[in-house]
Length: 343
Image (cartoon, rainbow, N blue to C red):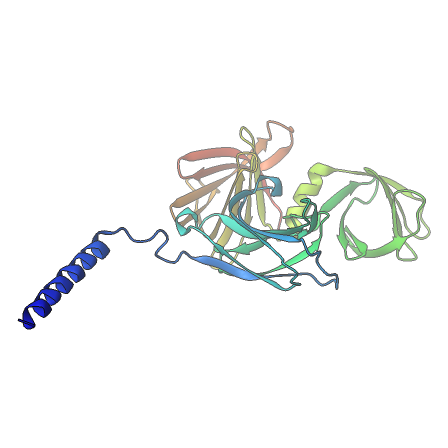
């Protein structure tokens, strides 16, 4: 008699366990059950300044475009500093399906107070994920002015009656590059504008005009040429060939290497930015022409250079090379010139 209730108990337990297993098998997996890839790193700044107790930290994954203002935020996270000081660690999950190997991605960050006023920010976004960059980053913050800057030091170009030159800021001073050599000048007191000297040469800029004085020579009055500045900036950044076009605005830069050439295309007025590190040079379709071809991910680009007089439709500037760029299903036509003394 006593054994029967136990048998019934065992039956009940088996039925309960089977029901529980059935529930576990038919229930959907928890949302996000598979760990998502995550970007990790630290944020810091060199100044020994404490963060306010109400500071909020924001880290964002962005797709970089042809200009900093056009960067697209793909993922963002915010958290309170909660009295902690730098370095501050962060973790930012992302969706790998949204990452295109031909495009550029970066992390940028900012620290704000409770009112939303930015106190610290990335001066330059830190590249991640593509083109040899990984999933970790140490982000260096700077006081919140001139933040989110993408480009290398801005290059200026001055047309002068006798000796034109380019200028770049380097540290506290400026470097003037002439055809026959460079000069590095340090700041000097000025009632207005910006003045630099090395004791023998004086450079004094006010707006788009500048005065240059060489020891023993009369001063030269020079004027900034923004069109020339863009091409000189590319040359100083190691670009061997550059092309431009319109409707929609685009530009292309090629850095030649062995065995591959690096091809950067910024199109649609800066809203699209592609990089191909594996460009191969091959003969073009006609005698004297050249062709660069590359593929990355789902994208393929073919750049054809034809030796022919070409005039930019917007500026009227003359070039010695006609350029056609085919990327995926789009075609761009424009003009270009070689910046290096190579091929």
